[in-house]
Image (cartoon, rainbow, N blue to C red; front, side):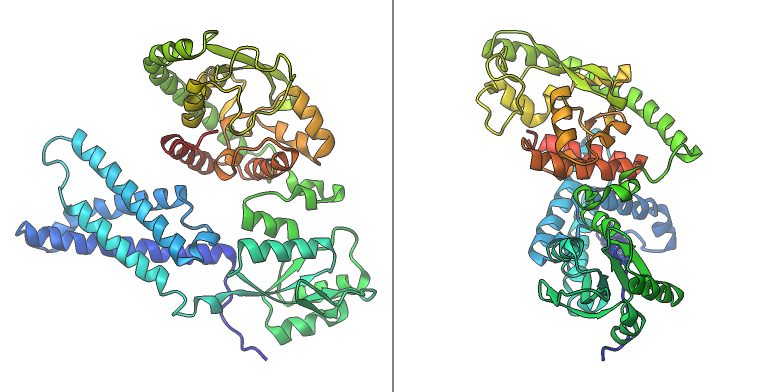
Length: 468
């Protein structure tokens, strides 16, 4: 019988990773300061460290920001040393670029010259050692032991999801069926008992969590077993919520209509949510004005290139559906030939679309074609962050094919969104389903921090030409 052991939740594992990384950053700052003092022949004492204490805060904060933007705490990346080290080097490269940019615009001697190089090298080594030693330290032994309650399609779905998205997070020790169950195993995982056996099986296998996969009314024996486990303090989580935590998506195709509340925002008209909406609108206005000012500087050159490449209008207007189903005119730079849908009618754009002009390809890669929508943001039709607005014909089509599709109309559409930074460009119903899962995750978890993360990732995609 397995011995009791430390079993961390997903959030606790993430905090442990972040804590170890921050400790490595702080230690690298301290050692870098020591090298700086030695090279500069400065006394390395408490007064020197106190005078430079700001570097501990600034570099730790900058690290957490860049790590979040680069998905350094994505379980699929942290589980593979090769992917982890390549992502670590990318983050350190970005850190150096930011520092060099600040260095050249700062006054002389305002920033130390080689200190940041010492820090980047040391932090790369220390974080690499910390992450690389986790398997040696028994990191895999921290996997959370769980029982899946149910033997239907939802159980199969969460087993596949755990295997693909979080193979090192959970150890599934068995399946629990009801008294009428005839299934013996799913995907190599055995059915080891019924609801009547559940409390004894939890104790025998030292399970810390029960994953509930029933989508309808619970059988009597399962209900009684869960109540007993609840009294024992065992954590229980519905399959849709665990799926959401692991993937960053809401599994709408796995949510029955009786559980429709799972896809809605976590809060209604609370004071906190109202404050968020006010602050978000203020930021929309300020950042839209700033963005339009920058866009105005490059517009004459872009417009000239567009006209030379493909004579026609510079701007392109198209009706889209906004919050609550209200239509509005979306403004873009024209990236396709004039009258692109004259023969085909409304169709999704595709990769390597022949209707896209040569300049249009560049506009789409850099997402410059979207900048005029900052006017839509100022008018209140859109926000900087939210689900991308869709055309009425596609909203009608997708509403009939995808459950809960209209739920994305509960918020203002955005210039960029969670789906845009987490998923590739899509032009099929299947792609629309996955992007809707991301959009609903955003709707459920809206915050200024998530908005900032999405905008930073969008900037990263623009700079690396990952637009559509």
